[in-house]
Image 1 (spheres, helix red, strand yellow):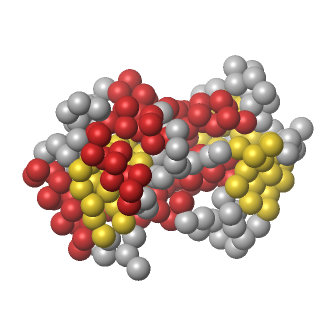
Image 2 (cartoon, rainbow, N blue to C red; image 1 turned 90 degrees about the vertical axis):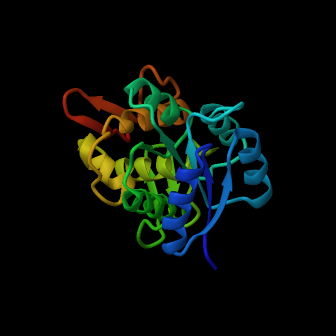
Length: 227
C-alpha cells in the first residue's frame, strides 16, 4: 500500500510540481492550500509525512507545525522561500524534521521524503534495545525512556539519540550526525543538528542548560555521556 504524503502550499505551481514527483515515486498525495485545511486533512487522513510550506494564508506553517507536534509525531519537512538561518531554526525547534529552501530540486525533496519515512518506520538495523546510563531506546518500537519515564520523540530525534547513545563517549561532528539523521549526506544546513539537539535536551535532560547526557564538544560536535 502506497504511503500518503500531505503537501501544503498556497502556490498551485509548487503543489503540482511536488505532487507529480511524489506520485511518480509511488506515493499517494493529498494537498492543502492553507493552514486550517492542512490541520483538518492531517487529523482526518493521518498522512505518513507532511511537506509544509512556511508562508501560508491565515494560519502559517509554524503555527501548523506547533499544533501538529502537540498531537502527533508525523514527520514534517518544511518548505519555504525564507533563507534566513533564524527562520530555519524556528521551524526545526518547533519539531520539524527537515527543511528545504525554495527554489529546490524535486528529486532532492523526494530523497528527503524517503529518508524521513525510513526514520519513521524504524529502519535502524536489527531490532535491539540500547541502554546507556538512564536512557533506554527500543529500535523495534521507536520508544525511549529516561530513568524509567517514557519520552515522546520524533523519528528524527530518536535517530539522533540512537546514534549518540549506542557509542557513549564518541565525539560526532555535526556533519556525521546530519548524515546519520538523513541516511545520506545532504549538502548545506548542518546547523539543523543544533536545533534537534536542543529539542532532545529539553526532553531528556534534568537541566537542559547543564546537559548531563548530550554534551557539546566545542569546535567539533557532540557526544553522549552515560555516567
